[in-house]
Image (spheres, protein in one colour):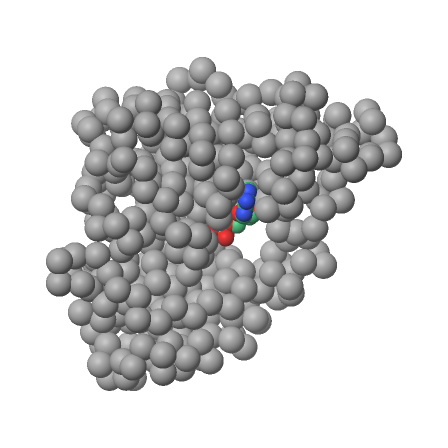
Length: 352
Ligand code: KG4
Ligand code: ZN
């Protein structure tokens, strides 16, 4: 089984071809990604119109490259999978329409993939991890804890009620004059800083449920920075270190809370999966590895390229769905919001 996956929901244009391995798990035959970071850098964030245009200009080329590199001709594919949301709708339409056109022209099934489901299933592509597992998804667009119980069977245990964690890193970086994307910059600065110089809040700590809130922490950093005025390089490093230490505490405490909810609702998880761009953060990774050790959980952190937005995860989600006969009609409409479970539909701000 070989599936082409298209990803255009945010600022990454991607096309990949993945094959189902005989024993389970996936083999990535080609994985083409084009980041638009440079196009958005001047604006300090993703500009939807620029993103959509860049997807249009790039996607065909990436599909052609994926086909050439994989050695699998278009006619040799079993299905076309395209991310159909949630995300910036202009970009979603580019990838979904391209997917529909290919599916129609090649007379292959179309699979409209939920981008979050693709993140959620990546640990099965890389590690063939059995259900059910706990997923911590932390990126620029998402911050959630999910019980992944089966394909199409997800329970959201917690999510951010305001900013995503990656977004908080990016906003803090911006207010401290560091370039976009801010996460790696803040992590680098933090290595030279004093994590105890500033006393910052740990929002939601001890609260029932497993939701996150980041905006108060971000504001606290801004107030400290404003109180100092002109920031020295050491001030910037200390603010980054103190901010990152607070994030680490929050992530560990909320993941622990999510684990309790998981065990109450779904029994013992097979592992803790950490995915999303923020999973690249060494301090967060180390703290979660400690938590996993303490709680006797296997921790799975897919490689960075597969944690950030990519086409292979879309192709893999396509394979999982195709195996179960879950294919879609060419009339499938792209969705800017598309929560993975019914509970998520009631999210405070719909941030998926
Ligand atoms: O998954 P991703 O590539 O794209 C989506 O948001 O979907 O995640 C990008 C986010 C950005 O907010 C970036 O600042 C953050 O992940 N990030 C990090 C690190 N590397 C990337 N945050 C903290 N520490 C890092 N080392
Ligand atoms: Zn994503």
